[in-house]
Length: 195
Image (cartoon, rainbow, N blue to C red; front, top):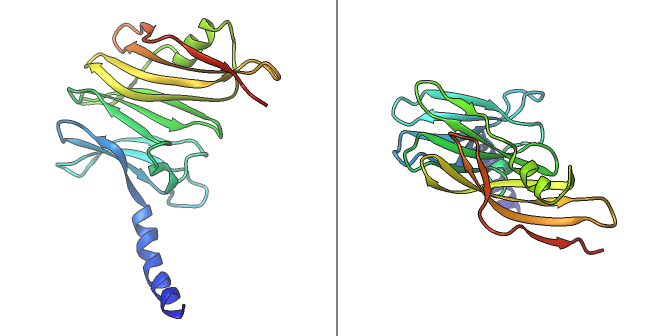
């Protein structure tokens, strides 16, 4: 028992230091030039940041401030922070936690300057198809694959409506990052919430 406690105390600083810089699962670009890394806050009131690092120069190419609900180290969990790179490494789709129950995806272009690409809201697109206007408790927009360098597929899931008639929905939406066109790839699956 005492030996286990001593080992735990000796290892704790190593574990904490490791948590300061966590790679995002699937965060390395296909061409091997960039990787995504989560950084712990430097001070208590600071937020967690996500950095895009140039692997060759070790320089930060982009820094993104994440929401207050995004905390290291659980952000490295692949169910919370999800990255999907385009096959040509010129774009990446990144899902992060926005609020306690919402996970949104943003798309970024990679080049001399990184910039966020404006796209229509895929969740609103699904809600409109269901004749709904807002979510009930949760939503999740998970990037699951790129069809080519200009089309990404997101899995959109959540709930909508008002109690007791809450509807749970799930679908895949294809987004053109050049035109902003959204289309449903498969039927929108729905079911009534139980209980």
